[in-house]
Amino acid sequence: MADELMLEIVTPERVLFSGNIEEVTIPGTEGEFGVLLGHASLLSSLKFGELNYTKDGRKSFYAVNTGYAEVTGKKVTILVESAEKSDMIDVDRAKRAKEIAEQKLDKLSKDDPEYDKVKGALDRAEARLKIAEKK
Image (cartoon, rainbow, N blue to C red; front, side, top):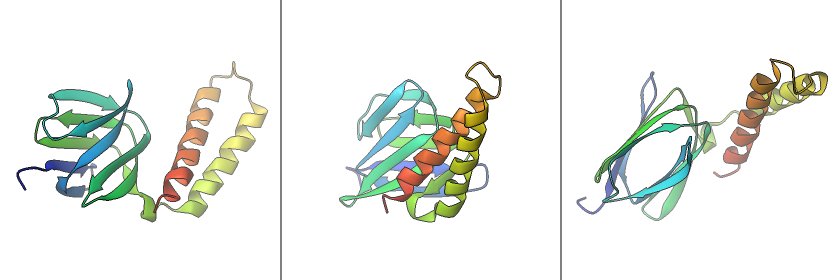
């Protein structure tokens, strides 16, 4: 339709989503931002987080990894390392990853070089669990 925004979510393996939407919210590295039809063109890096879009009045949620977003007035292209739709997230795997990260963090000091890496793993697991609840 002429009055809708085109969205593509692309990983190295495949095009995960391609279609017309009403709006999208994206986890940019400088902060979350929303895009509607007619948005100013921009290129943004992305951090791990929740991407959601509205199509036909219904929201869909994805956990997206790092990557880039290219925005034009009529199209948004999301290029990410990985993405999972909320209803496809393996909740048991995310819970295990959270437990492992919590156990490792308990043994590390904030000065340890591994701390930030393990904290990032914990943050990703918690975000995946939160997004999985939004089916």
